[in-house]
View 1 (cartoon, rainbow, N blue to C red):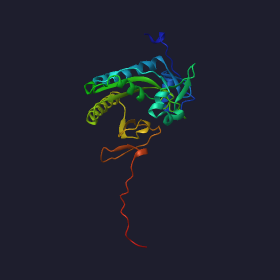
View 2: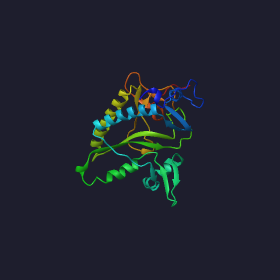
View 3: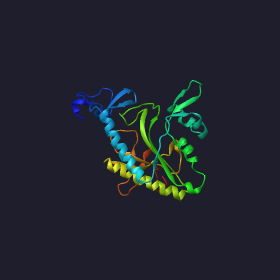
View 4: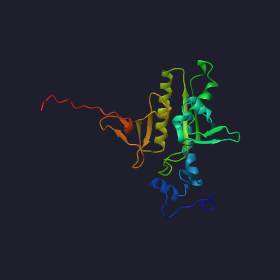
Length: 249
């Protein structure tokens, strides 16, 4: 399509309501347009970029044998009550009721629904292992949406869940996803660190984050120059290596 016939525009002046360089440049380049605090339109040029990113993610996930599906965004609140996580999410969830006064939420995450889906095909050990993933919109009522698309109330997430018969199988699946994520970020030419992180509301034995290194954000990453150690400051252990003095004053 000719540029003259496309819905494309740029802005000369900085956006007044953007507090990050990246968010400001995306607005000025005609990629996104804010509609309210933490909520953005993805404009045609931005949609093209988004589609390319999604294609890279799909290629790497499919290469590891993962299967794509699509979960609903509108979810019965009972799903999170039964899992015990409704209270943990608290006001971060967008809540609403239908015409029959039944409570629903806009999905902030989909672990519960993936567990329901997995139960449909878990009759025998022969049904395992398998990996399910989606690229879907998530909703979180952030207290302070900011930094452009970095922290918003409505965003697109790729989430994947593996199902195995034992921990050894889970370790194999985890390594596959570890490799897939590295390839995704390498193909996107991002400067990133893999750091140990808090497992949060999801729980589990281990959580690792792929942190894009930036001068803005809310996380602080610490690392060792002499080894490959890196961690989110929130969970970094501080070991006291100073020996107690035996001297008496």
